[in-house]
Amino acid sequence: MKNNLRLAVALGGRSARAAAYVGVLKVLEEQGLKSSILSGTSSGAFIAAPYAIGYSAKELEQLFLDFKACSR
Image (cartoon, rainbow, N blue to C red; front, side, top):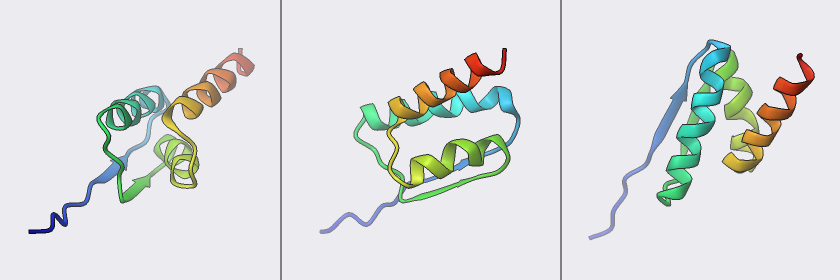
């Protein structure tokens, strides 16, 4: 029997949560899980968009750290 399960991830707003979203995506990748549906609003979209086009969670983490360093 073929398994047709799909994973959907929805990322919400608030900039403080953006770092947590990257962490969630990292854990999913470490467990071998890839979402087939990804959405985000506000800071969630800031994370979801590059992930959806192929950035890894590790690359997103570095982008987030670089952005945080520039905003000081």
